[in-house]
Image (cartoon, rainbow, N blue to C red; front, side):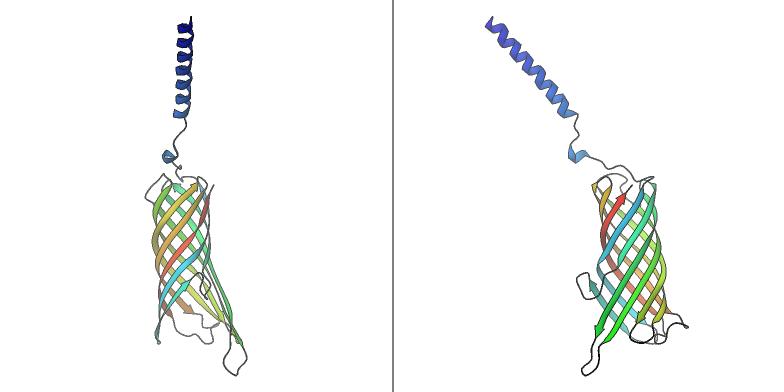
Length: 221
């Protein structure tokens, strides 16, 4: 009798253990999680420049170098972008860039002067992802942008045309399926052309080689 009871308990335990094992087997491991592709998804992107290097040559003038960090005195560039996934690894979109700078300068024995600038740029972009699925997806991207730059002091403002052509690459790291952290390094050419009717002190074109590191987040809907 006791032997029958013991055998019953053992068999029952084995049955329950098999059920539990089967249940756990149906739960996917975190390391095996795959974020779906991006085809048919809309992208909303927010970011800022973390680092910028600019080498500028002014026609009929000299050369200058400028390095900007996000915590430096020069304001960073902010971006807002929208995009759409044509395929799992191909995106098309449009980015808007803006930089605002305002400060006061004071010479010894003189009143303080206000100086500032505002730049805005619209840039269509294309992005190719090397991995169509997964949590980490490296990519390459290219963009072509047009916009304007306005600089002012206490006198009249200088208005200039802005053109840029850039290419680079980076990473999307998906925190969840609908949200990714993005890091992008861009190398490009920038032309600033003064508008004769609206530029009183800037009369020559400037050509710049620009390196930007952008970081931000994207929502995928």
